[in-house]
Every structure is written in C-alpha cells, then in structure tokens.
Image (cartoon, rainbow, N blue to C red; front, side):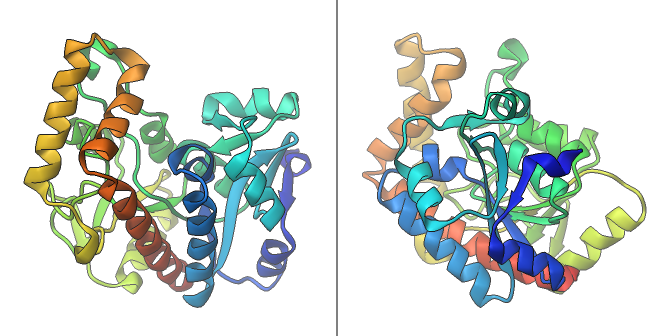
Length: 302
C-alpha cells in the first residue's frame, strides 16, 4: 500500500536498481532552516558532497500529496522559496498526503520516509531533543520517539545547546538508542565540538560505525542510531561563548513572557543575532560535514 504514496527521482530509482548506497536528506532545513539563497546553494552542495563520496543523495519532501524520494532542481527551488510549504513531522504526514499538500520533512518524518524507501542512512544538521523546562511543558521533540522505533542511522552534529542535552541523552538511553561519537568522546552540541556530556561509544572510522549499526539491526533491535559528528574545528564556535549567548537569550525570553512553542524560534533568532551571523556559517559547515560522513557510512553498510 505504501508504494502508492512514494515517488522516486530517476537518480534514486537507478541507485536502488543498482544496489548503490543512498543517503537521505531532510527538507525542513531548506524551507524553514536557512534563508534564501543559502538554503538552495547549501542543498545542492550537500547533494554533490554525497555523490563525491560514493553514495547517491535522496532529498525527501512532500509535494502534491506524494512522498518525494529525491527531488529535481525545480522542486528544490520551490521548496526554498514557496510560502506554501508546511513543516511535516510524523503527526502531519496523513493530513498532507490526504489533502495533496506540500510539506518539508523534519528529522522524524524524514526517518519514516527513508525507512519506507529502504534507505538506512540519513544526514542532517542536528536532532531535536528535550527542551529546557520540559518537566512542566512536556516539550519533547518527536525526533526522539522516532529514533526509538525507526531503523535509520542519523548522522548529525548532536543536539542544539538551546535544548536540555542531559535529559535528551537520558531519553535516548531509556529507549535503547546508541549515541556514537564519530572521532569524539564528547557529545557535540551543534555549533560547538564539545559539551559537558559524553557519548555512549566512540567510533573512529566509517567502517566501525557501519559495523555497529548493521549488528544492531541484525540482532532485531529496532530503532535508530545517532552518529554524533562534530562540526569542523575551523567553523566551530567556542563553548563558553555560545553558552553565554543562550543564557542571555533565555533571560530575555523569560523577561518578555515568551513561552511554549514560541521559545525555540525566539532563541534561534537571538543566537543568530548575537553571533552576528556566525551561527548560519557554522550551520552550513556542519551539514556538509555530516553529508560526507553519512555517505562514507552508507558505502560501508552495503
């Protein structure tokens, strides 16, 4: 039944027939995560990095009520410029597909669609997590529940430090999701290479990461794997600097009674403003690095 909702690009279809490694990419980063034209430029560069590293990119989105596994340049331009694109998580997929609407897939939705398409590796920026104050707001990203149940390895730069990283790790541990540090013992926190928290296991090669991922699924242990890949050193922001920026933004949010779902967009906006745009440069660099590592892992999973 699921086949009627899926539409593969010619490149991805050919890759599947030839049993080539494929790396899934999300589309929320294009529609809601970066300004134009950097969103389009970055998406094209990321796809090219995956090709250069021996795999085939599959950017995933919902267009006209179809799950697109791989998109054309025209579709990419539409995703990056249209105001009609809704943010699509697990909850939103039935509505968007049934009503033939357009959606940019979050980490959770991209994982679901990648599994439908038989794609085992997904490269993104950072995963969502448990938000600060979640003990009263219950604000926990759907990404974490998806990691608990969907068999896709997610290569990311950790979780953004606006989140409660400690509780995010506790949640992943409860659901048996391994957090692998790629060439690191410390969990990266998106803009920074380190955080006060450690990873579960360190892997130093794509081969080692692929071996652990494959073993998990061969044992019948359902759920994803987080491959935490630090932002390149040249593009990283200082941990103390970004912590001060976030603390300042949190204080301002409290003073202005900004609460609930308005907090995250406010914090991200303030981080961009207070880092004088350095956060966008860092974001682009880490996404490209994750694409490279994701492609290398996908090649070794074959």
